[in-house]
Amino acid sequence: MGYGSPSGSWLALGVGLNAGVAYVGNVGSAVVDFTALSDTVNVASRLQGAADAGQLVVAADLLDDLNGQLPGAQEQTVEVRGHGEPVPALVVTAG
Image 1 (tube, rainbow, N blue to C red):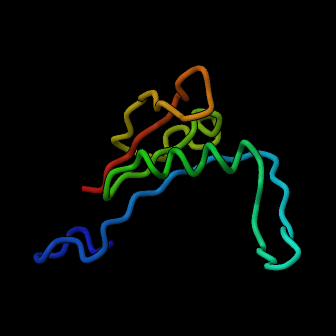
Image 2: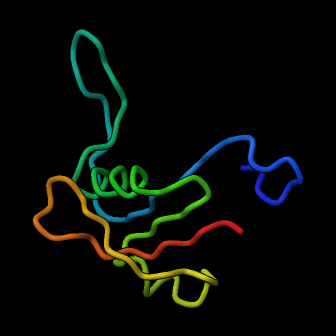
């Protein structure tokens, strides 16, 4: 956030993006937490964790929907904890 300003960014932010089925609702009894659960959510979280400041990391499953809309994007693979194989992704860096 704040990229392109003379003073640089004021908030180091990286984003991970994935899509799929998730289960959303209240979890817990003593302390209730509204949350989303599924492998889809876990992969999105891991992609976000792999994103550097100013980067958008998009799961390859979304590439057909975003084809040509992310100039300067580079295909990479991201090691995702809990998955045997790296996740193909598209990485876009703010410039």
